[in-house]
Amino acid sequence: TSELKKVPIPRKGVDYRGKIVLAPMVRSGELPSRLLALHYGADLVWGPETVDRSMIGTTRRYNPDTKTIEWTRKPSQGSSAPPGPDVKDSIIYRVHPEKEAGKLIFQIGTSNPDLAVQAARLVAADVAGIDVNAGCPKPFSTHDGMGAALLKTPDKLCAILEALVANIVPEFEIGISVKIRILETAELTEALVRRLVATGIAGLTVHCRTTPMRPRERAIRGQLRMIANVCHEAGVACVMNGDVGSRDEALQLIQEYGVDGAMIATQAEKNPSCFRAEAEGGPLPWADVVRQYIQYTLELENKFGNTKFMLTQLIPGKSPVYRDISPCKSYTRICEMLGYDDLMERAREVDLILDIDPGNSGKQ
Ligand code: FNR
Image 1 (cartoon, rainbow, N blue to C red):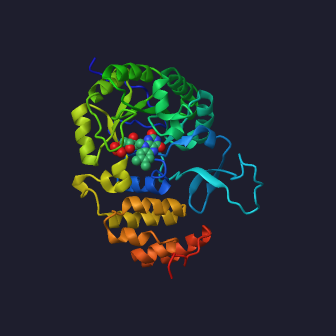
Image 2: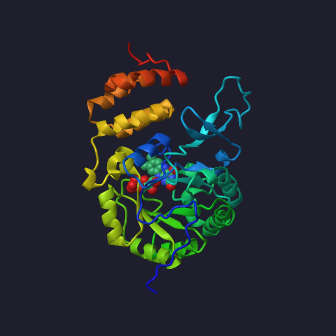
């Protein structure tokens, strides 16, 4: 009985045990942010929730300029406007097959087993796992029965997981996981988790907040040990999430609660070098992180709006630089402002590629 039961890890899948991972984050989990987290030592990265219907109908292609695989669709799809000849396809999802190899988990937003399988099929050969979002409390997710709404429809959630286990695992040899929140009582959570771990999933992440709890409220750890035990009885890896601030804190919490891994969101959004162990020097100053981030965004020709948004996360609001960033409307201006002389040439190139006026700073 000393031997630990384990749901078999598929050949191309990952074992979530012992891993400190980047949480799925819409906007804040785009490709440059994920590479940054990996650069600083994240063991695995979750992509931003992608809704099944937005993936279905996309075309997969390799982009040699950025060395990425992109799933794109015509912007006119679903609208009545005729497509212009030079209107660019929009990128719904993209991965870096070298840098994210064996490290990326695709998170799906779904409330339908068939659509979930259809969407998962499109990416399954290019990722290391498929995760189902059963924790997002935002109305855009729950109104369609997705995200945290699935916690109230366990039959549906189990049907989705079973469909993915049956249709994705044997063919693509990757694992399925689910991300949930705790319920109001330990009894309710236990009943749910018992059902989930019986579906054939390999991992379960629990965000230690209830659905009505706001992000600022402290995570509740009281149910964690029980959840880990229920997962372990079934051989499923249990990853904890909620108010984990750094790799060292994560390792401590893993010990304390008997969970297998830990997932970091908010702290990684603010400073992804939180994945660096104290023994390796620990988290770095924001200026170092921002420089590395800009290098990735230039390499990956990242959408400028996303880059600007991330800079407002990475640069502390009290720094004078924060204020200086807001009028910058091009990569050239940003590099100028931050004093990245060696990146200026590439910044101009990327501005051209993305159709951004390099001199456009909002001021002259
Ligand atoms: C999130 N979260 C989230 N969760 C999820 O399952 N799919 C998603 O796409 C997102 N998107 C998202 C965006 C942003 C900007 C934030 C801050 C959060 C929730 C996240 O993964 C995590 O569960 C919570 O933030 C709790 O972890 P922290 O923040 O306490 O480390």
